[in-house]
Image 1 (cartoon, rainbow, N blue to C red):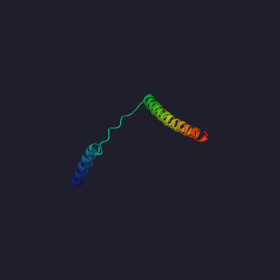
Image 2 (image 1 turned 90 degrees about the vertical axis):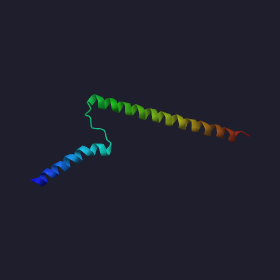
Image 3 (image 1 turned 180 degrees about the vertical axis):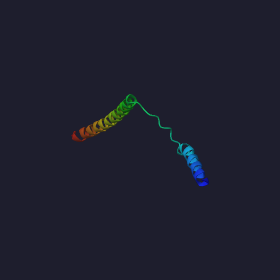
Image 4 (image 1 turned 135 degrees about the vertical axis):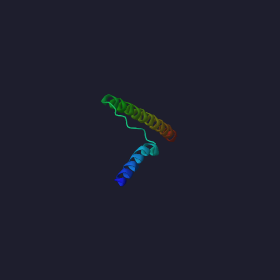
Length: 74
């Protein structure tokens, strides 16, 4: 009987200490609306990142085209 009490206390102590030790936030259930809005925001950020990368690639292409023009001139 004493072993069961000790095990239960140790288990309860570990359960209470676990969230503090990992530093994780407690889980909060989200509604389907919240999930869709969160996915929309993630997609907007992804699209913005891709647009920024595309703009950078277009600038690099423009520079190469200017360099190519310099080689073509006699």
